[in-house]
Image 1: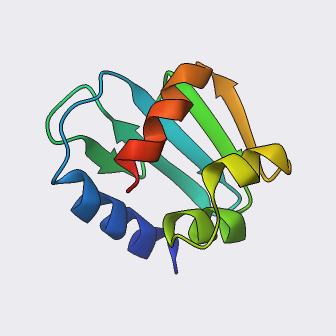
Image 2: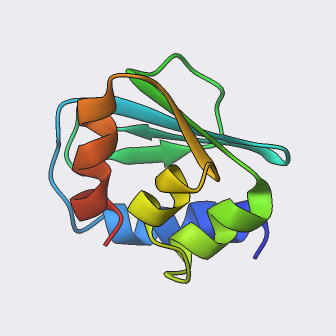
Length: 98
């Protein structure tokens, strides 16, 4: 998947969700996906904006995470996913990304 395909998939999923009160940014070697969860539905963009929580991953791992091939907790425990900022916000993502 390309960054644009992942962004579109996340936008489709977010369209069915409600606000979760925080913003999250995924940073990869191929670009950024920003989730603004302060509105319903959450807004997804490729803008490199400030966020409550930043998740850094290799693009291949990010693609696997969004595609359901990689579990977020497993990625974190094996060092494939690094979290900066509010860890509690990252925990909320489990329900947002599904």
